[in-house]
Amino acid sequence: MSVDYLIHDELYKESRAKGWSGWGGNERMAREHILPERLFSFRDVPRAGSSLELGCGEGHYSRILAKKGYQVTGVDVSQTAIDWAKEKTRETAYEIDFLVCDLSKPQVLLNQSFDLVVDGNCLHCIIGKDREIFLNNVHRVLKESGIFFISSLCSSSGVDEIIERNGQPYRTVLSYESLLAELETSGFEVKKSIFYQGDKTSHCTAHVSKCAY
Ligand SMILES: C[S@@+](CC[C@H](N)C(=O)[O-])C[C@H]1O[C@@H](n2cnc3c(N)ncnc32)[C@H](O)[C@@H]1O
Image 1 (cartoon, helix red, strand yellow):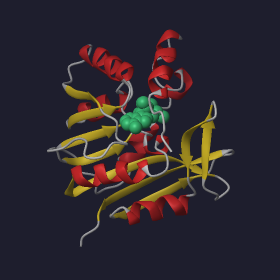
Image 2 (image 1 turned 180 degrees about the horizontal axis):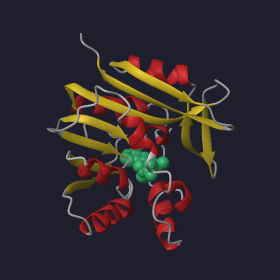
Image 3 (image 1 turned 135 degrees about the horizontal axis):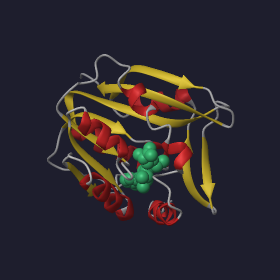
Image 4 (image 1 turned 120 degrees about the vertical axis):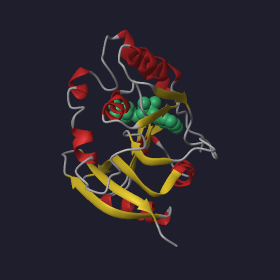
């Protein structure tokens, strides 16, 4: 199954045309404090060093990480999002590397390693076998002592689902158990995880490290 991740680029063009401040509209953007609160609720998150945001969009989480003193790289499949991230960041004092990168492709981000990798709500955009590639990419670039933080949609019913948009696969909504099992199969050890019950869809977070072999 081939998946068109560039649908996100179209959606960023639409978001900018509507005057939104970021992905999903201004109401969603007003809740941007939630992910960092959840990320830093775990005491073993490295408090300094290099960090990578996956699916950084217009870069608001990357700027929060930069404000905390990390060296930050933000990557996204959408050129429109990366241009927007660079534009917004130029208005600040932060220096962040923003790169266009399709994380469903093997061997991306070669020769880099990070103390902290943050899933900016990107893993649930990745469909089918591409998830193995995505997670391999993260595994390769995460330092042995590093932490990978996942923020993902999760099914409320406990059943794994693919959500479609215009007849195309758009979101992977796994059960909490399936998501944790997938992370373990991909060579990560779950250190902390939380399920946030919603109505139609729920959310979950996980802090994981590389398994010690
Ligand atoms: C749900 S949005 C979240 C954006 C932002 N981090 C936030 O939380 O507001 C998911 C992001 O993942 C990006 N994305 C989707 N598929 C991707 C892929 N294959 N490689 C890299 N980024 C991808 C999208 O362009 C989008 O910016």
